[in-house]
Length: 239
Image (cartoon, rainbow, N blue to C red):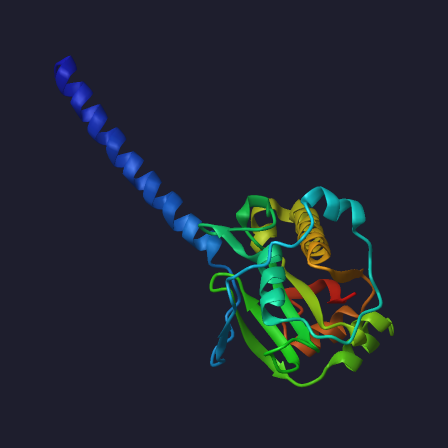
């Protein structure tokens, strides 16, 4: 075999391996992006994509951000809620979301306890980031139950909507093992801060809630505590 023939064989093998590697990367990127839990048999509510930029710069929103526990009775619009969802867990490019996630594995699921949003009946909802849509988990007013399970904190009952974030731990720990738990809680913090800053720029108030009965909230959302658990709650309302 001469040098020219050997080089040709090498190039063919190299191109073949490059194609296989590209296919592997593509399939894994698709898998990373499509991690939303699906609730079968439910009607999807597609949210408006005319997002609100807000009236404050990022710097001014950071500077004036405060936790707000008292809310006006005026409802949020569906467009405002849509904007907040996009700012926290929305798809910004390809499969990537508004908040960073270790390994782009996105273990966090977003649930909503809707109390006072125009165009949405009261109830528990699940957000599907891939489609920017909601599905209803349970209809009804759960504000008192959520307040009770969060150690009787007033904002939860008076909020227009409560953002409830759960973690599907295996998505991250299967790659990062025990250290993945740190990354999950970091990610929840990133998401919450996005909510704070976007809400503040729109004249809305937020307060983060860390004290709650995990199991009671899990049961309320009908999630399997062996695989998934609520890790953070934020209340949102008009100032």
